Amino acid sequence: MSVTSLPESVAGEAVLSTTDRLATFTRDAEVGPEVLQQAVPLILDTLAVTLAGGAEPGVRTLMDAIEPHSGASAVPSFWNERSYGQGDAALVIGMASHVLDYDDVSMLAVCHPSAPILSALLAMAPRERISGRALLEAFAVGTEVLIRLGQAMGFRHYALGFHATATLGTVGAAAACARLMALDHRQTGHALSIAASLASGLRANFGSMVKSLHVGIAAANGQKAARLAAAGIQGSAEPFDGEGFLHAFSGGEVREWPGDLELGAPFAIAEPGFEQKRYPCCYMLHKIIEATLALRRETGLTLRDVTSAHVQMPNGGTKPLIHPRPKSGLNALFSAPYAVVAGLSDGRIDLKSFTDEAVLRPEVQSRLADIEVVEDTALSTQGADVGAAPVTVTLVRASGDSVSRTIVALPGSRTDPLTEAQQRAKWDDCLLRANPGVPEEKRATLFDEGRNLAAEASIAGWLGRLSSAMSAG
Figure 1 (cartoon, one colour):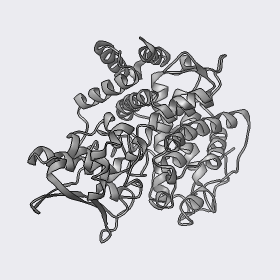
Figure 2 (cartoon, one colour):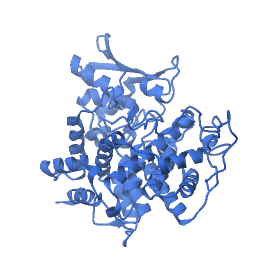
Figure 3 (cartoon, one colour):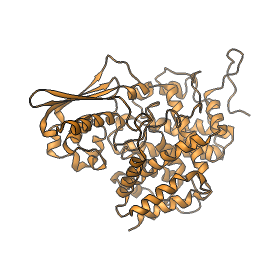
Figure 4 (spheres, one colour):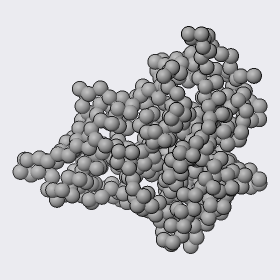
């Protein structure tokens, strides 16, 4: 029996409800080898930033607040000798995956697709029963549900103040876990229904510990939704259409799935792909950083040589940049003035740029007011258009003349991708952030093993070796 009754037909053909559409795709979608291939580097990238995130104070605070767990359903920590229940493990892994804001992006839905999905899947137990291929398939399905659901609602969802990674991530994580658990169509529909009511997260918490905690909550709630559905908890037959999820989270603009939006044709993971981050901060800062660093390289200008700067963003581009005068590393992840000042001062932007000490330097704080950031309101942009629109940085010298650089290509996208060398360097940087003592040979071996993830009969061995590397002296 279907999880919903079919709505009225259009042009003689039955139209699937949103829940039926999502449940059918989650259960039955074929994940081809090209999609699996695209998933591997994204999982490696996300796992690397997750391991690094485990060293952050907020994540350590969360770990200390959670009671250890033992037994068959316990999930071992990546960072210490503790084990957690599946829900608590998802919470910790999820927060760690996003606390550095170094995880990948999809501008199709203005979100971080990989972090909530992979966090939920890595917190499933027992890991010994999960093959590499099963992990990759569930990851591809979960991220596809997340992104297409975001596209169905449009940029209005984000503009209303929701943290799309958290809201969409809850439903996507439920789909991923339902796929991994091989739930039937009815159970999958109920998992999605439960997840629709557990979805939450506000942009107002950007720049605080709660922003990354959102991802942990999404992963834990998505996983919980799948487990509750498997146990027999039933939700509404159709929580998405009418006055359901789509309507509520779009501010009343969307009531049903758009007729021209398909799931898995192609998978977003394959086309256009996700944007992998070069810099550990909000993605709307990346073009600003690219332009600033390019001007510094080409002109030799440093912070001392510049009296002021002007940053022109696309309409809507400053929505997440809510901390023009950051007072902490977490604030600075969402600060356009800081990106310019730090880039000019240091000639680099990396993990060291977003410590409290780096942000609170007097020579940095005293220059933040010299950076003007404006939106081009004449250009109507939203959603993916925001990411595709140009960003221009103009530096003004003491003499009064100026130099400008405009960046169009999305850093880390297919038009300006991370090279394999950059991917490996990011992997190394993140593992060393988690444990400065991991030898170079060990880092390389773990990376190469991860690239062969699809062939692994069980993910437990590789994940166990990663854990050992994180806790080794």
